[in-house]
Image (cartoon, rainbow, N blue to C red):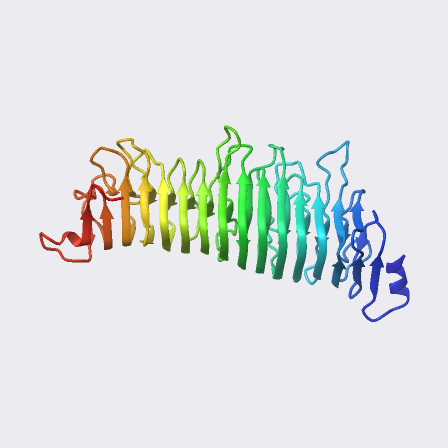
Length: 448
């Protein structure tokens, strides 16, 4: 009724006030703002999104709107005869829609199918601007916030994004979903979240396109099925991916549920990422994985602790063009020749200021491993790096597999180890070459 009145009697920047709980769908009107009283709940219980922009029925124009107050926005609709039939709390489709939302909480039921982008709590399929300030965003099954759409042929990108959310939770015991995602972005802008918890398996943040600067204090995924895809993942941008992620964080935690192993802490398969934080941890999988995409990977990780409790700490694939790893502590439990850092092919990376320790006592455990791929070994520089192996056998702090036709060059600006490096296959560069110099490598069995 309010919408019809505004259309029939035009008012400059009208305001619709909602003082009582409501289960009607709200179709936004251009330049008509909405205020929701504190404690009031909008909860759509029929087969439509709770709030949608001006693209429903006969309304086809873009909107520029603000929704504010301190209300709650929900969508509780479930089709009993078709439980996959779920809907969003907020959805926009028009490419020129601009929407700002300030509220207490947003809570959706989420989808049940194998697709992770089914009935997210917020789905900005397309639009020019989306800003959100909210205490909590909750989805019971799959996706919290999806910004932009990536069908097979077309990708929609949101140009202006600003999220300020205290907590995002994905709480699901459904194992038919391919993965859950707290935030999925084909967008450019800023994200500020205090904590993200996924009690499922999947990503706290999946960045697929655009430039995102994010500050997310704590992220944790508690797997309920085998999945290793990365709590934070940069991927899915296609063969010409150019996305950039700058992430400030305190903790990234890949945790275990019972006998279900945890996933990977941070994973990048394409483009560029810069991470600045305190701790990346995985109980059972890689702490960091840089591999798997069709485009090159670059960036940096500055993090105090990077730990895999029972596995390889870093996997660095041949697509890594240049990555700087600056960390005080790198720890893992690798029993194979893969080592704490497994790298292959044309990977190019720098490790700086790290105390590295492999806690596995098996005879095959190593430090940094360089593997041949496409007739090429990795290009590695070590700056003030200490490597400690807990195994009692004579093993290598830096190792090259196979029998190289020429020695593999490692550019060493200060390397310390409690065991020797692979002198048969590796040539340490930089430093004094004389018999007493050892290219600045110092071996001490008592190193700790």
